[in-house]
Each structure stands twice: as C-alpha cells, then as structure tokens.
Length: 178
Image (cartoon, rainbow, N blue to C red; front, side):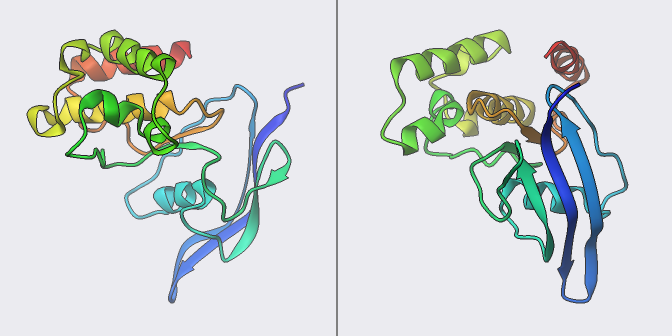
C-alpha cells in the first residue's frame, strides 16, 4: 500500500464574494501522477497556488508526508502557465535559480542544469538570454527549472501549452516514463 504524499483536507478559497475553490479533499499517493482537467476559471490554478503556499486557503489544510504545510512555500516544485524567466539571466542561470539565490549554484547543480538543457535540445543555448529564445524554448527552460528543484511533488500548470507538437509529444512521453 502506498503512502499518502499529498493530502488536501477541506481546502477552500474565496476572492470577495466569488468562490474560486469549494471545499476540496484530495489524496495523492507516493509515485502517483494525476491531472486536473476543467474549463478555464474553474479553480485549477487557485488549487495549485494553495498547495504551493502562494495563497493561503480560507479554510482547510495542505499536508505533505503527513506534515501540515498550509500557507508555507518551498515544499513543491511549481511551474506556472507563464515561464517567468529572469531576462537578465542566461538559460543555465534560469534553470538553477534557487541554487543561485541560496549562495550560488554548485558545479554539480550547474552540470545537472546543462545535462537537462542538452537532453531537451537546448544545450547550444545555455549561455543565451531569454530574449533570444522562442516561446517553446522558454517554456522548456521553465520546465527544466522545475525539474532541477528536485522536489517530490511537482505542480505543472499547462506545462506544454507553448510547445510545438513534436516537442510536446516528446515531453509527454518523457513524463509517462517518470
């Protein structure tokens, strides 16, 4: 029997009079891959923002490995719909920004970032800035940044939306392998 990795207990969030997220319960087992599907504006991103700690719920709890992390950030990898790359940083520095913020990326972290870039076809662009990249390439860098954070839980909000069909298929196949 798998252990519960992520548990949501009666999570709810309102914005003024608008209920963005009705009381929600969810359990995700260790190693499980789930997708949230629904129309635009139904609360998927709000749920991700609550799980990631960007937003606090009005009521309820977020538990990771049984520990209450409600309202606290830094416990999950989170790729938002927009790439949010830092325009003054190179591709490699956008892949390993958390290491850079924490006093500088180690050689091992930078090597891991380079390996990710090479694996997904951006090896020749590691020293380029985001302005020199296509929208799909920027989205790949954002995905690599999320992977490089090495969190047990990754929240991906439309991660393949800006990718071309061929790259999207390759990334979907890779995710199925993971």
